Image (cartoon, rainbow, N blue to C red; front, top):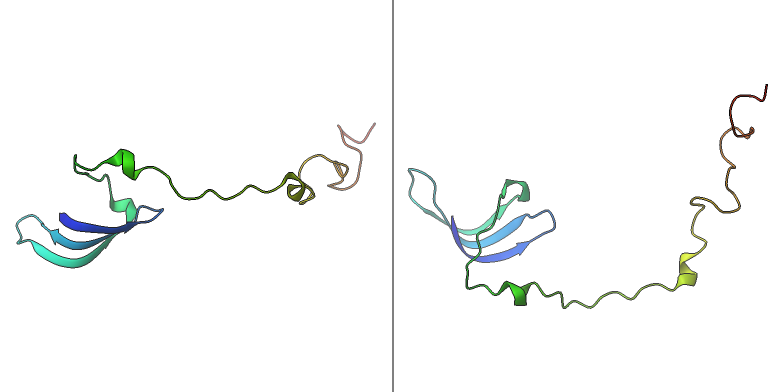
Length: 99
């Protein structure tokens, strides 16, 4: 299979191609305008050597600003803290019934 343009690849590796030439065994090549391939059917991509991957793989998107530490407190009970050990049937913790 040869193609001219890759429209996009999503998180699950689903790939959307444009201007595809599909070649099957013992058949004539078929030209397709668009083709979508599910990600679990893809083993690998063969990229041309002329492709400058160092320039393409640079993450230049703006990073989201972190939250302040005061905003992160007081969310749910979590582990530990003043309410620790208040679950279950309310009995004492440990082995057996204290006999």
